[in-house]
Length: 198
Image 1: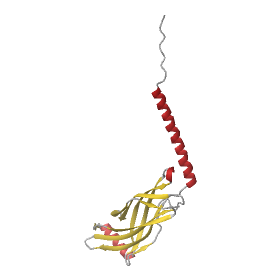
Image 2: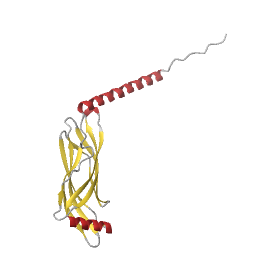
Image 3: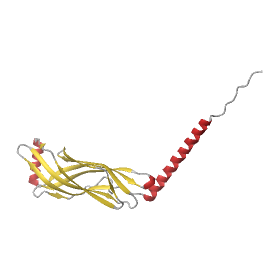
Image 4: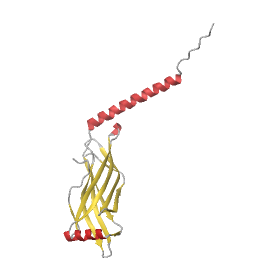
C-alpha cells in the first residue's frame, strides 16, 4: 500500500508572529484615531512669526563702493492656541540688499506657551559689501528718496506639543521688505507676517 504523506501543522513561531503583527496593526490604527480625535478637539492654530520692530543702526558706504550696515530686528513668535504649547526650531533668516545676502539671523529652539508671544531681538552687522555700479546707483537713489529697502527671507519649523497625542509640524515662513529712512535711521512699519497668517 502506498504511504500517505504526513501533514504538518502551522509553526507556533508563525502563529506568534502573526498575532504580534495583528496587535501592532490595531495599536497603530487606535493611535491614529486618538491623534485625529485629539487634533479635532484641540484644533490648535498655526503659530505665527512676524516683524514687530526694527531700526537701522548703521548705514555707511564710501566712494570706493563698500557698504556696511547694522540693523536691529525684533521678531515676534506668536502662539494663539489655548490648549497647546508651540515649539519653534531651526529659525533662520537672510537679510538681502539688491539681491545680495548681507547677513544671517539664527536662533536655537525655543518654546512659546499657550496664548503667549515671545520677542527675539537680533542685531545684525553685515560684513563689508563691495557694491557694483548698479548697487551704487540704487543706494544713491535710496538716500535721495530717503527710503532704503532690505529683504528679509526665512522662517522657522514649528510644532505643537499636545501631550500624549503626538505633535503636528508646520513651516512658518517670512518673505517681506524692511524699509528704513536713511535720514534718521527709523523703521517704516509695514505688514511682515508668516504665510500662515490669515
